[in-house]
Image (cartoon, rainbow, N blue to C red; front, top):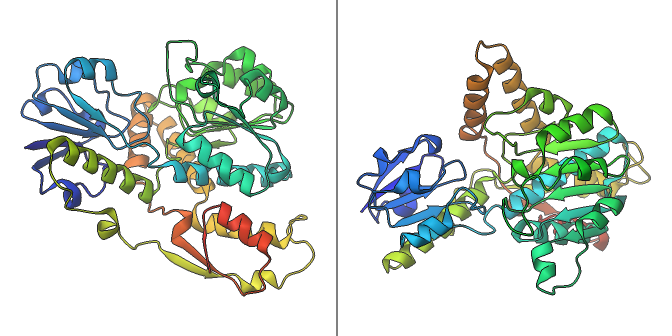
Length: 398
Protein backbone atom coordinates (compact mmCIF):
# COMPACT_ATOMS: atom_id res chain seq x y z
CA UNK A 1 0.00 0.00 0.00
CA UNK A 2 1.27 3.46 -0.89
CA UNK A 3 0.57 6.34 1.50
CA UNK A 4 1.15 9.97 0.48
CA UNK A 5 1.22 12.34 3.44
CA UNK A 6 1.79 15.96 4.42
CA UNK A 7 5.35 16.22 5.75
CA UNK A 8 4.12 18.19 8.79
CA UNK A 9 2.17 15.25 10.24
CA UNK A 10 4.14 13.98 13.26
CA UNK A 11 4.83 10.31 14.01
CA UNK A 12 4.03 9.20 10.47
CA UNK A 13 6.62 6.44 10.53
CA UNK A 14 5.74 5.40 14.07
CA UNK A 15 2.08 4.86 13.25
CA UNK A 16 1.92 4.07 9.53
CA UNK A 17 5.19 2.41 8.46
CA UNK A 18 3.84 -1.07 9.19
CA UNK A 19 0.86 -0.40 6.90
CA UNK A 20 2.70 0.57 3.74
CA UNK A 21 5.23 2.74 1.93
CA UNK A 22 5.11 6.41 2.93
CA UNK A 23 5.90 9.39 0.68
CA UNK A 24 5.96 12.79 2.39
CA UNK A 25 5.46 16.13 0.62
CA UNK A 26 4.71 19.76 1.55
CA UNK A 27 0.95 19.92 2.03
CA UNK A 28 0.33 22.80 -0.38
CA UNK A 29 2.37 21.09 -3.09
CA UNK A 30 0.64 17.69 -3.22
CA UNK A 31 -0.59 17.21 -6.80
CA UNK A 32 -2.58 14.67 -8.76
CA UNK A 33 0.70 13.49 -10.31
CA UNK A 34 2.01 12.66 -6.81
CA UNK A 35 -1.06 10.47 -6.23
CA UNK A 36 -0.94 8.41 -9.40
CA UNK A 37 0.03 5.28 -7.42
CA UNK A 38 -1.34 6.25 -3.98
CA UNK A 39 -3.94 4.26 -2.08
CA UNK A 40 -4.11 6.58 0.94
CA UNK A 41 -3.80 10.36 1.30
CA UNK A 42 -3.06 11.92 4.69
CA UNK A 43 -3.30 15.71 5.00
CA UNK A 44 -3.64 18.64 7.33
CA UNK A 45 -5.68 21.79 6.68
CA UNK A 46 -3.60 23.31 3.85
CA UNK A 47 -4.34 20.66 1.18
CA UNK A 48 -7.51 21.12 -0.86
CA UNK A 49 -8.87 17.61 -1.44
CA UNK A 50 -11.36 17.58 -4.30
CA UNK A 51 -11.97 16.29 -7.82
CA UNK A 52 -9.15 18.41 -9.21
CA UNK A 53 -6.68 16.61 -6.95
CA UNK A 54 -8.06 13.07 -6.89
CA UNK A 55 -9.89 12.45 -10.19
CA UNK A 56 -8.35 9.42 -11.88
CA UNK A 57 -6.15 8.42 -8.94
CA UNK A 58 -6.41 5.13 -7.03
CA UNK A 59 -6.84 6.89 -3.65
CA UNK A 60 -9.60 5.20 -1.62
CA UNK A 61 -9.00 6.70 1.82
CA UNK A 62 -8.41 10.33 2.79
CA UNK A 63 -7.55 11.23 6.36
CA UNK A 64 -7.14 14.78 7.66
CA UNK A 65 -5.30 14.99 10.98
CA UNK A 66 -7.35 18.05 11.94
CA UNK A 67 -10.69 18.97 13.46
CA UNK A 68 -11.84 20.98 10.45
CA UNK A 69 -12.93 19.45 7.15
CA UNK A 70 -13.70 22.53 5.04
CA UNK A 71 -10.65 21.70 2.87
CA UNK A 72 -12.24 18.36 1.92
CA UNK A 73 -14.98 18.15 -0.71
CA UNK A 74 -16.94 15.63 1.33
CA UNK A 75 -19.93 15.26 -1.04
CA UNK A 76 -17.62 14.51 -3.98
CA UNK A 77 -15.56 12.05 -1.94
CA UNK A 78 -18.71 10.24 -0.84
CA UNK A 79 -20.02 10.12 -4.42
CA UNK A 80 -16.76 8.50 -5.54
CA UNK A 81 -16.86 5.93 -2.74
CA UNK A 82 -13.72 7.39 -1.15
CA UNK A 83 -13.68 7.07 2.63
CA UNK A 84 -12.87 10.30 4.48
CA UNK A 85 -11.88 10.61 8.13
CA UNK A 86 -11.05 13.55 10.37
CA UNK A 87 -9.80 13.97 13.94
CA UNK A 88 -12.57 15.71 15.91
CA UNK A 89 -11.37 17.36 19.09
CA UNK A 90 -7.70 16.56 18.53
CA UNK A 91 -6.42 20.11 19.05
CA UNK A 92 -9.26 21.47 21.20
CA UNK A 93 -7.14 21.78 24.32
CA UNK A 94 -4.42 23.67 22.45
CA UNK A 95 -6.94 26.19 21.12
CA UNK A 96 -8.36 26.70 24.61
CA UNK A 97 -4.87 27.44 25.91
CA UNK A 98 -4.31 29.84 23.02
CA UNK A 99 -7.48 31.76 23.91
CA UNK A 100 -6.54 31.87 27.60
CA UNK A 101 -3.13 33.30 26.69
CA UNK A 102 -4.80 35.91 24.47
CA UNK A 103 -7.16 36.93 27.27
CA UNK A 104 -4.28 37.26 29.71
CA UNK A 105 -2.25 39.39 27.28
CA UNK A 106 -5.13 41.67 26.33
CA UNK A 107 -5.97 42.17 30.00
CA UNK A 108 -2.42 43.27 30.74
CA UNK A 109 -2.39 45.69 27.82
CA UNK A 110 -5.78 47.25 28.56
CA UNK A 111 -5.62 47.14 32.35
CA UNK A 112 -8.85 45.13 32.54
CA UNK A 113 -9.60 41.99 34.52
CA UNK A 114 -10.37 39.36 31.89
CA UNK A 115 -12.12 37.10 34.38
CA UNK A 116 -14.71 39.79 35.12
CA UNK A 117 -15.58 40.23 31.42
CA UNK A 118 -18.54 38.45 29.85
CA UNK A 119 -17.21 36.14 27.14
CA UNK A 120 -19.30 35.05 24.17
CA UNK A 121 -18.40 31.82 22.39
CA UNK A 122 -19.67 31.43 18.84
CA UNK A 123 -19.59 27.78 17.80
CA UNK A 124 -19.93 25.33 20.68
CA UNK A 125 -18.54 22.12 19.28
CA UNK A 126 -15.41 20.28 20.35
CA UNK A 127 -13.39 23.46 20.94
CA UNK A 128 -16.10 25.88 22.01
CA UNK A 129 -17.59 23.52 24.59
CA UNK A 130 -14.18 22.84 26.12
CA UNK A 131 -13.42 26.57 26.24
CA UNK A 132 -16.77 27.22 27.91
CA UNK A 133 -16.07 24.59 30.57
CA UNK A 134 -12.62 26.03 31.28
CA UNK A 135 -13.89 29.60 31.54
CA UNK A 136 -16.83 28.65 33.73
CA UNK A 137 -14.45 26.76 36.03
CA UNK A 138 -12.40 29.96 36.27
CA UNK A 139 -15.46 31.90 37.35
CA UNK A 140 -16.06 33.65 34.02
CA UNK A 141 -19.57 34.42 32.79
CA UNK A 142 -20.12 32.98 29.32
CA UNK A 143 -22.70 33.34 26.56
CA UNK A 144 -22.99 30.48 24.08
CA UNK A 145 -24.15 30.77 20.46
CA UNK A 146 -24.57 27.74 18.22
CA UNK A 147 -27.51 28.08 15.80
CA UNK A 148 -27.39 24.46 14.48
CA UNK A 149 -27.52 23.05 18.02
CA UNK A 150 -30.17 25.54 19.05
CA UNK A 151 -32.27 24.50 16.03
CA UNK A 152 -32.16 20.92 17.32
CA UNK A 153 -33.90 22.08 20.48
CA UNK A 154 -30.86 22.17 22.75
CA UNK A 155 -31.01 24.74 25.53
CA UNK A 156 -28.47 27.18 26.92
CA UNK A 157 -27.84 29.14 23.72
CA UNK A 158 -28.49 32.74 22.67
CA UNK A 159 -28.75 34.28 19.23
CA UNK A 160 -25.71 35.95 17.69
CA UNK A 161 -27.20 39.44 17.84
CA UNK A 162 -27.95 38.97 21.54
CA UNK A 163 -24.42 37.78 22.14
CA UNK A 164 -22.94 40.78 20.32
CA UNK A 165 -25.08 43.15 22.37
CA UNK A 166 -24.04 41.65 25.71
CA UNK A 167 -20.57 40.10 25.39
CA UNK A 168 -17.37 42.01 26.15
CA UNK A 169 -15.28 39.33 24.40
CA UNK A 170 -16.21 37.22 21.36
CA UNK A 171 -14.27 34.04 20.62
CA UNK A 172 -15.00 32.30 17.29
CA UNK A 173 -14.95 28.49 17.01
CA UNK A 174 -17.31 27.63 14.17
CA UNK A 175 -16.57 25.66 11.00
CA UNK A 176 -16.48 27.44 7.66
CA UNK A 177 -19.66 26.88 5.65
CA UNK A 178 -20.78 28.85 2.62
CA UNK A 179 -24.35 27.63 2.12
CA UNK A 180 -27.49 27.11 4.17
CA UNK A 181 -29.33 29.04 6.83
CA UNK A 182 -26.36 28.87 9.21
CA UNK A 183 -23.58 29.65 6.72
CA UNK A 184 -20.56 31.13 8.50
CA UNK A 185 -18.74 32.75 5.56
CA UNK A 186 -18.46 36.46 6.52
CA UNK A 187 -20.66 35.81 9.53
CA UNK A 188 -18.93 38.81 11.04
CA UNK A 189 -19.68 41.30 8.28
CA UNK A 190 -19.60 45.08 8.39
CA UNK A 191 -22.95 45.34 10.17
CA UNK A 192 -22.13 42.84 12.90
CA UNK A 193 -18.61 44.18 13.41
CA UNK A 194 -19.98 47.68 13.91
CA UNK A 195 -22.34 46.33 16.57
CA UNK A 196 -19.46 45.26 18.84
CA UNK A 197 -19.71 46.72 22.31
CA UNK A 198 -17.37 49.56 23.34
CA UNK A 199 -14.02 48.08 24.34
CA UNK A 200 -14.86 44.68 22.84
CA UNK A 201 -12.25 42.02 22.15
CA UNK A 202 -12.69 39.81 19.06
CA UNK A 203 -10.68 36.57 18.84
CA UNK A 204 -10.84 34.42 15.70
CA UNK A 205 -9.07 31.07 15.84
CA UNK A 206 -11.56 29.18 13.67
CA UNK A 207 -11.38 29.98 9.94
CA UNK A 208 -10.30 33.23 8.32
CA UNK A 209 -13.32 33.87 6.06
CA UNK A 210 -15.65 33.79 9.07
CA UNK A 211 -14.66 37.46 9.47
CA UNK A 212 -14.85 39.94 6.58
CA UNK A 213 -11.22 41.08 6.60
CA UNK A 214 -11.83 44.38 4.78
CA UNK A 215 -14.69 45.28 7.09
CA UNK A 216 -12.59 44.42 10.15
CA UNK A 217 -9.67 46.54 8.98
CA UNK A 218 -12.01 49.47 8.36
CA UNK A 219 -13.52 49.05 11.82
CA UNK A 220 -10.12 48.95 13.54
CA UNK A 221 -9.13 52.11 11.67
CA UNK A 222 -12.20 53.86 13.08
CA UNK A 223 -12.33 52.43 16.62
CA UNK A 224 -9.22 52.14 18.74
CA UNK A 225 -11.29 50.71 21.61
CA UNK A 226 -11.76 47.37 19.80
CA UNK A 227 -9.02 44.76 20.24
CA UNK A 228 -8.78 42.10 17.52
CA UNK A 229 -6.82 38.85 17.63
CA UNK A 230 -6.46 36.87 14.41
CA UNK A 231 -4.88 33.45 14.17
CA UNK A 232 -6.58 32.75 10.83
CA UNK A 233 -6.70 34.96 7.75
CA UNK A 234 -9.17 35.24 4.90
CA UNK A 235 -6.51 34.78 2.18
CA UNK A 236 -3.92 32.74 4.10
CA UNK A 237 -1.10 32.00 3.61
CA UNK A 238 -1.31 35.55 2.23
CA UNK A 239 -1.71 38.01 5.12
CA UNK A 240 -2.63 41.67 4.79
CA UNK A 241 0.14 43.50 6.61
CA UNK A 242 -2.06 46.56 7.13
CA UNK A 243 -4.69 44.40 8.87
CA UNK A 244 -2.06 42.59 10.93
CA UNK A 245 -0.64 45.95 12.02
CA UNK A 246 -4.04 46.95 13.38
CA UNK A 247 -4.54 43.68 15.26
CA UNK A 248 -3.59 43.46 18.91
CA UNK A 249 -2.23 39.96 18.27
CA UNK A 250 -1.49 38.26 14.96
CA UNK A 251 -0.42 34.62 14.61
CA UNK A 252 0.01 32.18 11.68
CA UNK A 253 -2.83 29.67 12.18
CA UNK A 254 -1.18 27.99 15.15
CA UNK A 255 -3.84 28.24 17.88
CA UNK A 256 -4.12 24.47 18.07
CA UNK A 257 -0.53 23.74 17.10
CA UNK A 258 0.53 22.00 20.29
CA UNK A 259 2.54 18.84 19.77
CA UNK A 260 -0.06 16.92 21.77
CA UNK A 261 -2.91 18.10 19.54
CA UNK A 262 -1.03 17.10 16.40
CA UNK A 263 -0.13 13.71 17.89
CA UNK A 264 -3.76 13.03 18.78
CA UNK A 265 -4.74 13.91 15.22
CA UNK A 266 -2.24 11.41 13.82
CA UNK A 267 -3.40 8.72 16.25
CA UNK A 268 -7.07 9.24 15.38
CA UNK A 269 -6.43 8.93 11.65
CA UNK A 270 -4.28 5.84 12.23
CA UNK A 271 -7.20 4.28 14.09
CA UNK A 272 -9.59 5.23 11.27
CA UNK A 273 -7.29 3.75 8.62
CA UNK A 274 -6.88 0.52 10.57
CA UNK A 275 -10.67 0.25 10.79
CA UNK A 276 -10.97 0.93 7.05
CA UNK A 277 -8.42 -1.78 6.25
CA UNK A 278 -9.77 -4.23 8.82
CA UNK A 279 -6.33 -4.34 10.43
CA UNK A 280 -5.70 -4.49 14.20
CA UNK A 281 -4.10 -1.43 15.77
CA UNK A 282 -0.48 -2.19 16.56
CA UNK A 283 0.52 1.19 17.99
CA UNK A 284 -0.77 3.40 20.81
CA UNK A 285 -0.13 7.10 21.30
CA UNK A 286 1.10 6.73 24.87
CA UNK A 287 3.81 4.38 23.60
CA UNK A 288 5.04 6.77 20.90
CA UNK A 289 4.59 10.24 22.41
CA UNK A 290 7.87 11.93 23.40
CA UNK A 291 8.59 13.16 26.92
CA UNK A 292 10.12 16.47 25.78
CA UNK A 293 8.55 19.46 27.51
CA UNK A 294 6.99 17.54 30.40
CA UNK A 295 7.72 19.56 33.55
CA UNK A 296 6.98 20.25 37.23
CA UNK A 297 6.81 23.52 39.12
CA UNK A 298 6.86 24.08 42.87
CA UNK A 299 4.36 26.82 43.68
CA UNK A 300 4.73 27.13 47.46
CA UNK A 301 6.70 30.41 47.22
CA UNK A 302 3.76 32.17 45.58
CA UNK A 303 1.33 31.08 48.29
CA UNK A 304 3.48 32.92 50.83
CA UNK A 305 2.64 36.26 49.27
CA UNK A 306 -0.20 38.29 50.74
CA UNK A 307 -2.08 41.35 49.62
CA UNK A 308 -1.92 42.29 45.96
CA UNK A 309 0.89 42.12 43.45
CA UNK A 310 1.48 43.43 39.96
CA UNK A 311 -1.13 46.12 39.31
CA UNK A 312 -3.70 44.86 41.76
CA UNK A 313 -3.50 41.19 40.86
CA UNK A 314 -4.08 38.74 43.68
CA UNK A 315 -1.67 35.88 44.45
CA UNK A 316 -4.15 33.58 42.72
CA UNK A 317 -3.98 35.72 39.57
CA UNK A 318 -0.19 35.69 39.72
CA UNK A 319 -0.01 31.90 40.04
CA UNK A 320 -2.46 31.38 37.19
CA UNK A 321 -0.54 33.85 35.00
CA UNK A 322 2.80 32.19 35.71
CA UNK A 323 1.48 28.67 35.09
CA UNK A 324 -0.26 29.59 31.82
CA UNK A 325 2.79 31.37 30.46
CA UNK A 326 5.15 28.60 31.47
CA UNK A 327 3.36 26.34 28.99
CA UNK A 328 2.38 28.81 26.26
CA UNK A 329 2.74 32.54 25.60
CA UNK A 330 0.93 33.92 22.55
CA UNK A 331 3.25 36.94 22.54
CA UNK A 332 6.03 34.72 21.19
CA UNK A 333 3.95 33.65 18.17
CA UNK A 334 2.85 37.24 17.61
CA UNK A 335 6.47 38.43 17.61
CA UNK A 336 7.56 35.76 15.12
CA UNK A 337 4.64 36.60 12.84
CA UNK A 338 5.37 40.34 12.86
CA UNK A 339 9.06 39.74 12.21
CA UNK A 340 8.16 37.57 9.21
CA UNK A 341 5.77 40.20 7.82
CA UNK A 342 8.40 42.91 8.24
CA UNK A 343 10.97 40.80 6.39
CA UNK A 344 8.47 40.06 3.62
CA UNK A 345 7.70 43.76 3.24
CA UNK A 346 11.37 44.38 2.54
CA UNK A 347 11.40 42.08 -0.50
CA UNK A 348 10.50 42.81 -4.11
CA UNK A 349 7.62 40.30 -3.98
CA UNK A 350 5.72 40.67 -0.71
CA UNK A 351 2.99 38.18 -1.62
CA UNK A 352 5.40 35.32 -2.33
CA UNK A 353 7.64 36.10 0.63
CA UNK A 354 4.63 36.32 2.96
CA UNK A 355 3.15 33.03 1.83
CA UNK A 356 6.48 31.24 2.12
CA UNK A 357 7.15 32.83 5.48
CA UNK A 358 3.70 31.89 6.78
CA UNK A 359 4.22 28.24 5.87
CA UNK A 360 7.76 28.31 7.25
CA UNK A 361 6.51 29.49 10.65
CA UNK A 362 4.11 26.57 10.76
CA UNK A 363 6.61 24.03 9.46
CA UNK A 364 9.32 25.10 11.93
CA UNK A 365 6.99 25.66 14.87
CA UNK A 366 8.79 25.28 18.22
CA UNK A 367 7.97 22.58 20.72
CA UNK A 368 4.73 23.36 22.53
CA UNK A 369 3.11 20.99 24.99
CA UNK A 370 -0.21 21.39 26.81
CA UNK A 371 -1.21 22.31 30.35
CA UNK A 372 -1.77 18.73 31.61
CA UNK A 373 1.92 18.04 30.92
CA UNK A 374 2.85 20.62 33.59
CA UNK A 375 2.52 19.31 37.14
CA UNK A 376 2.10 21.96 39.84
CA UNK A 377 3.26 20.97 43.31
CA UNK A 378 1.35 22.70 46.11
CA UNK A 379 1.51 22.35 49.90
CA UNK A 380 -1.51 20.83 51.60
CA UNK A 381 -2.78 24.24 52.76
CA UNK A 382 -3.22 25.55 49.21
CA UNK A 383 -6.69 27.12 48.89
CA UNK A 384 -9.30 24.96 47.19
CA UNK A 385 -10.37 27.92 45.08
CA UNK A 386 -6.87 28.16 43.62
CA UNK A 387 -6.72 24.42 43.02
CA UNK A 388 -10.08 24.57 41.28
CA UNK A 389 -9.01 27.42 39.01
CA UNK A 390 -5.78 25.69 37.96
CA UNK A 391 -7.57 22.40 37.44
CA UNK A 392 -10.11 24.15 35.21
CA UNK A 393 -7.20 25.52 33.15
CA UNK A 394 -6.07 21.93 32.63
CA UNK A 395 -3.00 21.66 34.86
CA UNK A 396 -2.05 18.53 36.78
CA UNK A 397 -1.99 19.21 40.53
CA UNK A 398 -0.33 17.44 43.45
